[in-house]
Length: 476
Image 1 (cartoon, rainbow, N blue to C red):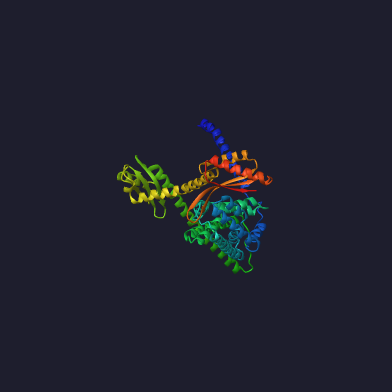
Image 2 (image 1 turned 90 degrees about the horizontal axis):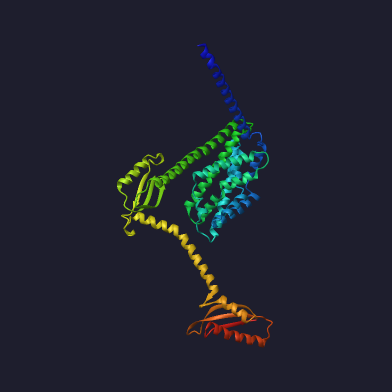
C-alpha cells in the first residue's frame, strides 16, 4: 500500500505542474490579447465628441459638397461606372449626422440628438432632390446593374453597415485622424448610391425602386448609428450632466427609448434578412444537388421567400410523379425549406414541339432567352454598324478607294487630298446617283499646268474605273 502511494506521488506532482503551466499560459494569452485589442488608452473622448458635433451640421460648404457629390454619384449610376461612384463617396459628407445620432443617444445628449435628426432630414431631402433633378433632365433613362443593386437590402448590406460603422467610430475615437478608415467606410457602407436611386425612382415614376432604395439607406444608417452607440457605451464616454436631476432622468429615459426603438427593429430586420438569405442559399443548393433526372434539363428556376415557393422549369423527358414526390420528401428534411413548396414545370416529352409545352415553361424559356440575348443582340448590331462604317471608308462602287488614292498620288504628285462620295441629284424628272471625286491640288501649280493635270487625271480615272460618267470637283 505504501509503495502504491509513493508511485502515484510523482504523477500527481507532474499533473499539478502541467495544470499550473496551463493556467499561466492562459493568463499570459489573455494579457496579450487584452493589450493587443485594448483601445481605451489611445481613445481621445473629448476630441471625438467635438469632431462628431462639428460634422453634424449641413450648411455652407458641407451642403454644396453634398450636392456636387450627389451629382457625381448619379452620373456614375446612370452610366454604370463603379469608379465614378467610388469617387463621389470619397467627397461625400454623409456620415456626420448618422454618427451624431448614435453618439448622442449613448451619452444622453438630447440637444445633439435633435440637431442630428434635423440635419439627417436635411441631408436626405437635399440628396434626393438633387438626384431627382439630375435623373429628370438626364436623357439616359435605362437601368443597369449599379442601379438595380441598390433597390433592396440583403444580409450582406446589414453586416457591412454594422462592421463599417464599428470601424468608423473606432477610427474617430483614436488620438489623431485616421482619414483612410473614414474614407474606406464611406465607400464600403455605400450611403450615397441608395439616395441617388431614390431620385431615379421618383424621376421615372418607379416607386418600388424608390422605396427599396430608401429602405436600403435606412438600414445602413440605422446600423452605423447602432455601431456608434455600442462603441460609445463600451468605451465609457461621459454622460451629459444636467443640473436638474428630474431632467437628467427624463433625458436618460428618452435616450434609452430611442436606443430601444432603433435596436429592436434592427434585430428583427437582421433576423428576417438572415432567414431569407439562408432560404435562398439552401434552395439553390437543393435544386442543384437533388432536382435531376436522366433525359431532362433545367432551363431556369427561381425561389420566393415570401410565398415559400421553389419553381423549377424543365424540358426533355417527362419526370414521373413518383420522382417529384421523392424530391418533395427530401425537401422536408432540410430545416429552412421544410415549409417550402416545390413546383415543377415541364414539357410533354423530348420529341415534342415547343408549342405543346406547358404555358409556364414556354413563358419561362422566352423570358430567359430575351433577358440573356437582348444585350448580346444590341452589341452585335453595334459591331455590324461599326464594321459597315469602316468598310465604307475603304470600298465603294466595286473598287478599292485606298488603291485608287495611292495610284493617283504616284501619278499626280501635285494632288494633296482626294475624297469620294455618291452624289444624288435630280432634274425634277428623274433622280440619278453620280460617283463624285473631290480633288485638292497644290496651290503653287500654275494655271495652265494645273488645267492639263486636271484633264489628264479625269481621263485616267474614267479609264481606270471603267466608268462613262463621273464627276470631279477640283479645289486649289
